[in-house]
Image 1 (cartoon, rainbow, N blue to C red):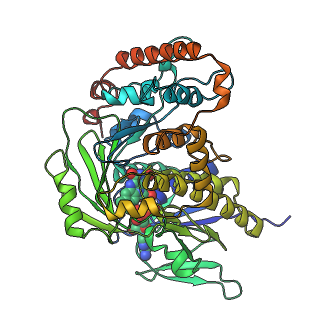
Image 2: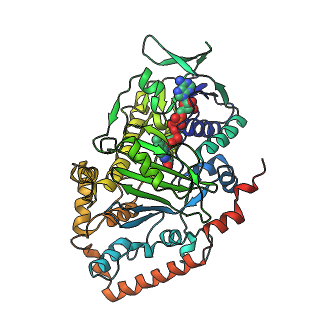
Image 3: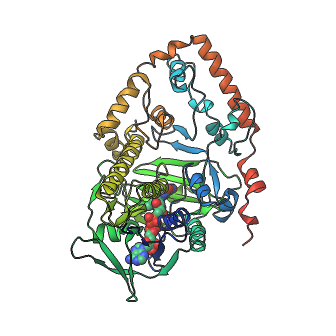
Length: 506
Ligand SMILES: Cc1cc2nc3c(=O)[nH]c(=O)nc-3n(C[C@H](O)[C@H](O)[C@H](O)COP(=O)(O)OP(=O)(O)OC[C@H]3O[C@@H](n4cnc5c(N)ncnc54)[C@H](O)[C@@H]3O)c2cc1C
């Protein structure tokens, strides 16, 4: 049989995407499968943001064999139990989108349905009381899950991290290089394509060196050096649906208590993130430049910092959307080169992870079967679209009357699938997860309940239990969660005891 195995993989770009890809491929494929070469340019640098994650990142680190406490110490990380949304629905209003689930499903029906029933009766107000992650975050508590006995909420603590992404890329570089990945410093200035079909043959560096490959992975960031500039895959522009196109970022000094959640605060024409790390707080103001100037956005950011800024504010521009093809010919785009939807729900690093794992499950040989590429593209496009709809929900479901930006978001026409989800929720409070979409019914419930008006009624199946029985069961859950949250140590104390970055031995 002809040996069609790919033996030369070239990754262009060494940001979070490039090094995550290099570390994962070298771990899964092993040292003898193919030569993996990564090119990056110190003079270009990386985007230098991306500090909040979702729980799946822990699976990625485990797959690489990185002990969690080592990862935390190396990246000055803290733990994240969810996101607090301030001023999104209206001014002086807030709600929490926790990781994990609320309460427990009963009689085959989701907990949300029973909660909605009591909500309709005016017997409950805030679903956070039924989420251990939300209750712990409220008091800056944290611990990892442990076997605390049957039915204890402490068995299921869901968490992610806030971390220094530059330090993370550095750590992954070490792992990748230890497994044989070759790093080349240099700026790609030209790309050579095969004359008959346009496949990429090699990239040329400023030094004149040519690096040949069979599979090229474009991790060059917003430039999309290979996927856009060379292959001209085209871009699906979502600026009309996700209006923000700029961000101004500046870290500031930390405070003694480290919150165990991300805070996002809506402003006049966008929103500001607050991401606490062990040694500082990451901050950024994401905004739509049609409704505020860079100077005004910067002033708003600086007005809302907890401590002194540690760097000059830096402005970044982006266009929301994705490459029309994620995989084109012998090139696969991963990271910002494949698209960007804004950082509101910390989905970009997850999309890198997803791109890598789908590349591995559809890994090509030298024939580059078009069916593999088509499938990869279809699955990734659907993944992007479902996340996009969830993000639009945050902007669209608002009652704010104080700014043109928020009024436009509310009045915009949203994609049909989101419109249908909204109509279902408005009617009976039901929420759904489509296929294997990233955000499950709990996440949809958290945000819809946090931002939408009260549904017309509740799921009729919730009448399975009598009102008294429902009240009684929810009261027991509320108490179990409150007791569990009380039991948890302060986040700072947990870090100091287990994974204080200051104890790192280099
Ligand atoms: C404002 C903002 C906030 C964000 N916040 C979050 C968040 O909280 N959570 C999250 O999950 N994600 C977040 N993201 C996204 C996250 O930052 C990115 O997904 C992540 O950093 C990956 O970036 P990247 O590696 O694709 O690109 P980059 O970091 O830009 O890396 C590109 C690499 O390509 C190299 N390169 C480019 N051109 C050339 C060339 N010609 N020759 C050689 N090398 C070249 C560069 O040197 C660099 O190494 C945020 C993004 C933005 C813009």
